[in-house]
Amino acid sequence: MADENKCLFCGIADGSIPSLKVYEGKNVVAVLSIKPTSKGHVIVIPKSHQAYLHTLDGDSLFEIMSAIRSITLLLSQTFNPTGFNVLNNMGPGAGQRVPHTSFNIIPRYEGDGIKIELPQGEFKEKELIEAQKKILEVSKENTVKALKAIKEGKIEASPEVKAEAEKALAKLEQTENPMETVDKQYSNKLEDLMKKEEE
Ligand SMILES: [Zn+2]
Image (cartoon, rainbow, N blue to C red; front, side):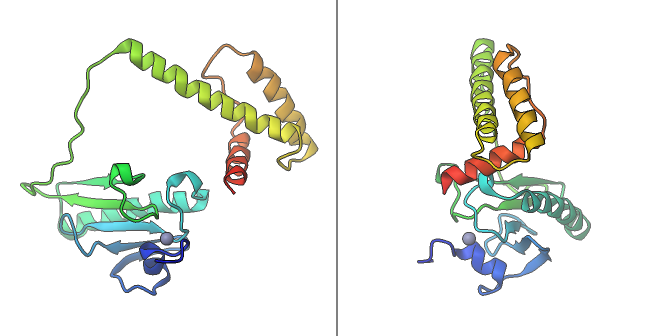
């Protein structure tokens, strides 16, 4: 635990800590929780030590979702629950105990007494519109930042991509439509940029 890059889940993933595995793939393992919330409670863990989803690579993310799909099907066949809750706690403020992201698959049974309730707030249209505006502003700022970094050569890109980034940037800076997005290929570049900045 002293090593910042090695934690309980890293130990489970590399086998140095014993666990009861129900799935293992290239990037992901899934084990039975030793203090289960319900029968068949499984924890899905990426092998890469990342505190949050933000910095997890695409392959791991994809494998997590596909593992959740197979495991819930498997648990359905095995224990015949009435449903599932799939939970990812991000940050200590949300109840995350291990600083290594994970998903809990919690099978639900009639009368299990588990309460996962999301209180419903009031419908306040003005606040919602304001929130959407803020989110989209930050999203646009991020995209502009990534495109500028490509344009200025801070992110490596081919001359074609560079030219396209310049065009996209000009378009984005003019647009009034907050939902205006640029081609998907830039989202990966943006992730690279953000990772670089974190280092
Ligand atoms: Zn870890």
